[in-house]
Image 1 (tube, helix red, strand yellow):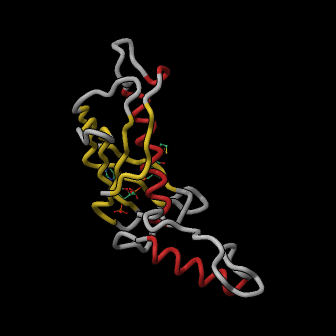
Image 2 (image 1 turned 180 degrees about the vertical axis):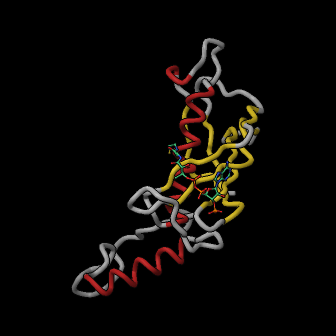
Length: 161
Ligand SMILES: CC(C)(COP(=O)(O)OP(=O)(O)OC[C@H]1O[C@@H](n2cnc3c(N)ncnc32)[C@H](O)[C@@H]1OP(=O)(O)O)[C@@H](O)C(=O)NCCC(=O)NCCS
């Protein structure tokens, strides 16, 4: 499981008990999971279909830094299933787990559409595809147009999980 996104727990994220409000956490998790699904399925039109039991394992407090982790556990025909975990970045203590989050891949009419994916896509594959399509059109933005030299590293290794 990759933990990419970090959040800093601020006063506006707290419940009256002074700990992290569950609604804030769920919003962050849903957005993180949607981004993961979009990257994996290479389609912006994905929607949350199902979330299993949510286990608030422990609380976070103001000033804590937490991190959100995702991994794909199943690729269906039109769906992708993820597992999510949130933990304290420093202590690694688990804060929340969601065993099953199902996202559905949609077509332009909003209907479920086959996504064709069967396994987790990694950054090098996505990067190679990007470079290939860019080569057909124009120099990639990370290449010097005259020399073809790489000028910046465009994609971090773990940008796509
Ligand atoms: C997503 C939506 C288009 C799917 O429609 P549907 O009629 O359920 O579609 P299907 O029955 O063809 O199911 C689509 C996929 O979801 C899966 N699925 C459906 N219900 C499920 C459930 N309760 N639990 C887990 N997976 C489920 C199906 O197994 C199928 O996956 P597969 O093709 O990989 O086997 C429709 O339910 C919808 O629009 N829901 C609202 C989504 C939404 O607004 N989300 C919140 C905002 S992002």
